[in-house]
Length: 141
Length: 476
Image (tube, rainbow over all chains, first blue to last red; front, side):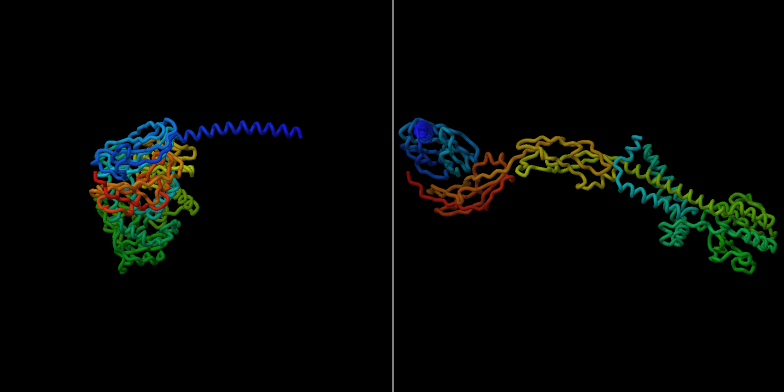
C-alpha cells in the first residue's frame, strides 16, 4: 500500500512538471501566432486617413498607381509583415512593413505603366513567411 | 582472311537467297542454250560487261560508257540474230524441262546406216548433201527445208536424194537417229581457194562448215565421190568403211558411263562457275558501291519509372551517319533503325546519357560512322497533384463610372496534375482574356482556363464561371 502511495506521489510530481513545461511551450507558440491578427486587406486606388479609397479588383492604368492596404488588430508585439507583388506568378517586388501594438494599418504601392497590364496578386505574409492572404486583381486599360 | 570477312560482313539470309536464285538462273540459261549460238552471244555480252566493270573500277569513264552502249546493242543483236534459236529453245521445252529438266544423253546416231546409205548413193552417182550437227545449233545459219522427223534408215536416206524426190536438191539434217529435215538450203562458201571441180553442193557444205562445227557429207553427182567437210578440213573418202571410220572419229558417241561422268562434271563445273560469278556480282553490288547516308532517328526511352515523367530532353531525335551498299541504304525503312535509351537507372532531375553503338539497332550490312549529338540530357520528374486558385484575366476598359469591386470564380480553385518541377512555380491558373468593355452590370460570365504547359493536366472541365460585382464609382 505504501508502495502505491509513493508511486502516486511520483506520478503526481511528474505530471505537474510535464504540465508546466507543456504550458510554457503552447503559450509561446500561441503568442507567436497571435503577434498580429489581420482583419482587413484590400486593393484600392488610394489611401486617405489610413483608410482605403475605392477598393476594387480591376484598376485602370490611367490612375497611375495601385495600393495594397492591410489592417491588423490587435498587434500584440512589434513584428513585421511583407507584401509581395506578383505579375502572372512572377515576383515583381517585395516590401516589408513594421507593425506596432496595439493595432496597425499599413500599405504598399506600385506605380503602374502600360506594360503592367494583366493579372496581378499581392501575397501578405507574416514574419515567419506564413501566407495570411492573397489579393488578386487585374490592371487593364 | 580479314578482307574476306569484311566482304561477307553483314551477310543476310536475303543475300543467300539472292545469290542462289541468280546462280540457278545463270545455270538454267547455260543448260537451255548450250551448244547454240545464243550461248556464245550471251558469253560475249557477259565478257563485255566484265570489261565495262573493270573500266569502271579503273576510272575509265569513256570506256565504261562505250561498253555499256555496246552491251545494249550486243544484247539486242543476240536477240534479233538468234531469234530462231531462242524461239526453238522456248518452243521445244515444256515447263518442267524449262525450269529444272536436264537434257538426256543423245541417242546413238547409227553411223553404219549413214555410211552404207552414202556408199549406195555414191555408187549410183546420186548427188547428196547430209548434215550432222554437233554442239552448235544451225537454226540461225540454214534456211527453208521440209520437216521430216523420220526414223533414219538406209532406204529413207537414199529416197530423200533420189533424183525424182522434190527434196533432193537441198541438204538432209540428221540428229540422233532421225532425219530431222530435208531440202534445207545451206549458206554458200565464198572461199576462192576451193577446188574448181567443187560444185554448188561442195560450196554449200564448205559454207556451213566454216560457220558451225557440224559435219557435212557430200556425194558428187558427176563423179560419185564422197567428201566430208568439218570446219576447215576437207576429207575425201573412198568407201563406206573409210566413211564410218571418219564419222566415228568426229561424231562417234562415247560410252554411256563416260558420257554421264563428263556431263555431270560439266554441269557441276557450270554450277560452280555460276555461283562464283553471281557471288562476284553480289560483292560488286553490295561492297563495291558503298555509300554514306544521314538518317534522323527518333530516340525511344524505355523502362521509365511509372511515377516519373520526362520533362525535357536536349534532343528528341539523333542524326546518324551510316555507311553500306547503295541498294541496302536505299531499301532502309524507318522502323529498321532505332535508338533505345534505358531510363531504369535514371533519377529525378537531369540525367546524362551517352549514345553508343549498343543503344542503336541497325539492319545487317549497315555500319555506323557517327552519332550527332552523341550525348543527351534528359530531365525527369515525379507526378504531383496541386490545387491552385483561378484568376480572371481582365482586359480592355470598364465603361466610365463603373468599378469592379469583387470577382469570384466558380470553382475558386482547380486541381492540376503534372511534374513536380513544373508545378513548383505555378500558383495560379488564369482564364482566357475577358473583355471588360461590354460589362455594364453585375452578373456571371463564362470563361475558359488557359494552360500553356503540355505536361500539366487539369482534372475537371476547363470552362468556369465568374461572378462579378460592379458598382458606380463614387464621385470625388
